[in-house]
Image (cartoon, rainbow, N blue to C red; front, side):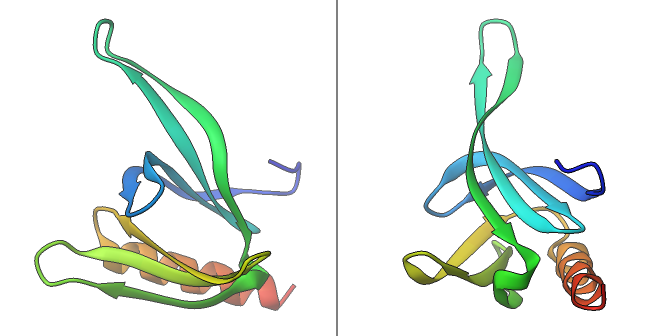
Length: 108
């Protein structure tokens, strides 16, 4: 993270295509890091950062699902527009935090 970057929210979760990892929202970006776990000694470590999206590249944020709820966002990437879907606890909280972070980022 940059020296002026602040972590807002972080959670272990699962993304539909990327798998298990740790979702992090900062005042500048959303990142998703792989999570490496070992059952033998119950250890878990951050792996490679597989998603690093600037808040300025996020097009839409929403939640979906009736029983299995997910926080979703569409973003501009090098390959075009891409949608990511994360299974997190408290999708409403994530939705509000992401929307607030995007608004604050735009007003800087």
